[in-house]
Image (cartoon, rainbow, N blue to C red; front, side):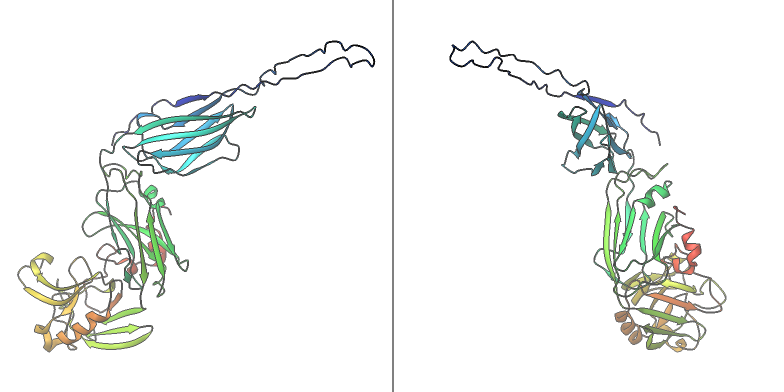
Length: 406
C-alpha cells in the first residue's frame, strides 16, 4: 500500500507581551523654615529581557493530507509548553502529557485516517511571558478498512475454556503492532497470552487463552484500541475500537471416552451424570476428532447435510439439541436413529450422538466455553487451534510462541 509523503512541519510563533516599569524618585528634602523648592521626578522604561524571545511551537503531523497512524507530537523552542489539547471535529480528545522539561508533548493514541485535528498549546517564554498557539492538520483518508469479528459477546457468561477470539476481515501483516493495542484485564490477574493462527474460514485470527482453564467467577474485559492502526500490506486501516466484557461460569468439564462410548459431565470436580453415546465410525472420514474441543454455540434444531462437510450424500436431516464443537462440523446432539449403538459402538458420521432425553438434559446443563476432553484410539487426530477453539491442544510454551511479541 502506498504511503503519503510527510508534509513539512507547521511552525507557529507565540508573541509575548511587553511590560514596562515606572520608577519615581523624589529628590531634595524640604528645608525647615524655608520655602519649598520644586521636587525632581524621573521615569525609566525597563528593557525587555534578552531571554524573553517568542516561543516557537512545532506540530507533527502537518498539512492537509498528513499520514495517519502516528502519535501527534508538539515541541517548543525558546520556551516551554504548559498545556496541549488535541481534538478532532467531533470534540474527541487525544490524551497526552507534557514532558517534565516542558519541551514536548506526545499523544497516547495515534492520529486516525480521514480526520481533522485542532491543536491548542499554551506556552511560557524563558522570560516568563505566557502565550498560546493554535494549529491544525487533516489526515489522509483510509484507502481500505479492516474490521473485526470477536467472541464472546459483551455480557456473556461462558465456560472455563472460552478464549477471547478476534477474526479479521483482511490480512494482518503488522501483527506485533496490532497485538500491542489489545489489552486484557481480569478480576484475579489471570496469566494468559495471545496466539495468532489461520481461522477455519481462511482469515487471520488471534486468540487469548489463559495458561490453564479460567477460575469460575473470573471477570474479563477486552479493550482493542485499534483505531488508527495499520494492518499492513493488503489489510487496510482500523478505524474504530472494540471492547467486550464477560464472566466465567461454573467449573464444568465434559469428558468423552470414545473407546468406552460414554460422556461424563463433571462439575467442580464431581461427576454429575454419565451418558451413553456413539461417536464417529472408525476407519475413515467419519471418525471423530480427539483432544480438547470447546463448545462454540448451542444451535438447537438445525439441518445437517453431509455434503457441507465432504461426506457426499450420507445424510440430510433435521437434528435436535445441536451443540457445535468445531467449524468442520463436529457436534454433540440427539441422534435417536443410532439408539442401538449408544454405549456399545461408534457408528456416527463424526458427531457425538445420544438419546433425545439425554440430549435435552445435557443441552440444558452446558454453556458455550465448556471444554470437551475427547479421548479415543481411532480418531481423525487432534483438533487444530483454528478449527473452533482448539488452542488447548497446544502446550503453554507452544501457545506462547504464537504471540507476535515473543
